[in-house]
Length: 610
Image (cartoon, rainbow, N blue to C red):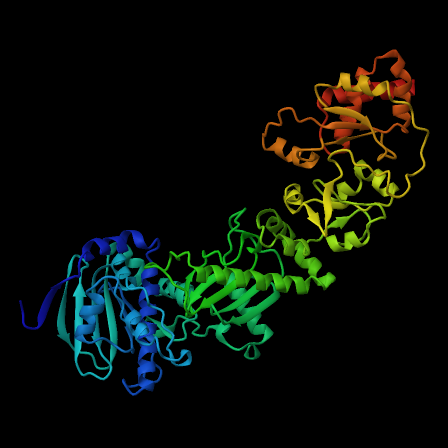
């Protein structure tokens, strides 16, 4: 072995672990640049901290992390003016997998005051080895601050490494990656700037990428969320919002706060002013970005529940535990507390904004359906969300809340009545509302797809049950006064005849007093889904088995009175089928046999004209 070059074996099982790092630990090769830039920024922070105590010289003025691609030599160099490493540091930190100098340094500061601790990112031990995803050989030349000696660590990542004396004019570290043929994209300056902008845009240390002999800035270098709110203008917030989510509008709400206590984090969140474009239709995951000490870690940490997925922004924490890969967060109590705190803060903001009816209406039209999903799936926040819901109504203009509805309930009314369907405009004209309008009873009109599901989960509001007016036998006799109509016919003989004629299609035929102008209407049985839910399930190909609707007839309608008179003859089968199809059409459904239905209608019209 040469006196100037020392060859060493890696620590135990390093070969197997290196293979894991290169082929399994990270899902995207570009992550290597994030890891190396993070390590470089940490080294600079560490040098600054030691300079305060006199243990190391300060960082040179204008120092930056430099990324230098060389296509001709097929090398990529990451240089920093940081604390550097001595020979022993190189062997200890780079020669043993899952050991990190930053982590050891951070542990040595356990007794330091929070305000005196540098902000360090690389506490993970294996990030450096991600370089082997794109490099066939890696060389690290480093000079420890305060030392005149420099050393080069070199390895192909195959079980051993070498250490050799080197020259470096200033303290710091140069990492040279001899890039694999299939990774030459990372020798393109524009590709490097894109990766840095994505993963390390807000590291405060300047990062540059060399192109045509010049060092071009690659990161913004300022973590906006770390600034005091008093120093940020509305334009500054809006510019960051548009940069973060590639938006073109103004944020509807901006939430910026710093949380301390059992968990410490800073959050800057935005509620958009318009509904964002979804690249993937039906995407339900929150994409709030998780940062650790300004470094972007992931946007897949589910920091907010799916029903708040429209919220955009950044959460930056000081002490969130991570596992060996920054892409895989541990399910820690700390992360759970952050999620809870962030969710509650957004809910608090929405409750405050909901008091401003005009501005809240715009938010609700954009994101109301998402909040309703929370009613369906989130038991913890269900009651909080109920107060944020807004609806169209059969008795009020604009949007109304459940609390507003309860305040207007009629004497003797015990339930909150709702009607679900395809659109509020169509529902407002539904025959289902006739009896309610006649007695002055308000009905909430629910026209979102999720409206078929959440009312049953919520169940009640302010101890008032929520009830679909198409389900069961709704008794309005104790509320208000019914509208005057024609004399009610005796339908005692007609009802069994209709039921017998329609026994294959309905579960029951009964008289009702909740119709005024219409002859018939459909209802769902007391137990099971209401009519709108049944239609949705039918479209999805779901089998109802024995579930059949109830046909309700209006004894005061001329058509029913006429049929009641003919019931003595005992033949109402044709009329029965026509009544059922009329009821289906009224509810936005199709006749059982459209051709037969149109023929019967034509015959009835001809008979009337005759």
